[in-house]
Amino acid sequence: DKDGKVDWLNEFNNSPDQEAMEDLQALMSSFDAILLGGATYDFVLDYGHWMSPATPTWVFTSRELKVIDPCIQLTQENPKSVCQELEKRNLKRIWLMGGGGQLAASFQTSGLINEIHLAIIPIFLGEGIPLIKQTVEETQLKLLESKSYKNGIVSVKYKVIKD
Image (tube, rainbow, N blue to C red; front, side):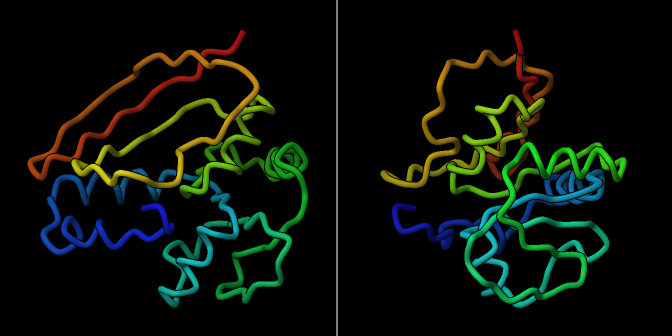
């Protein structure tokens, strides 16, 4: 929402769609590494533990934050530098996680996003944090797949078309 809260997700967490949960678990376990911004990591800190302790994770932040799992590394590096490090480690499927928009915009501007997986939740918030903040140019997407669930959530996967 406009304050960065995700309380509105509780309705879907309290009565989860089994198929949606299984698909989400499969998606989450398919990544070699996770990247997220400091604001998204703040939610993790409130939660108390990291959901993917076996997955190398980088948190982009200039703040000193508590590291709650050994797999988490705080970084002030730019997206391109971190992606070069991931490549050196042979980490290929990377989840750019979170909803702040600024980090996603910096990855998009650098041409580092290949696919976009979205879960469309059936609720209008009125105001909120953008998926991707302003970038320098339009980006064409090609739909790769979509799936709807009984709880009204729709999952879509797009390929980013690069020139």
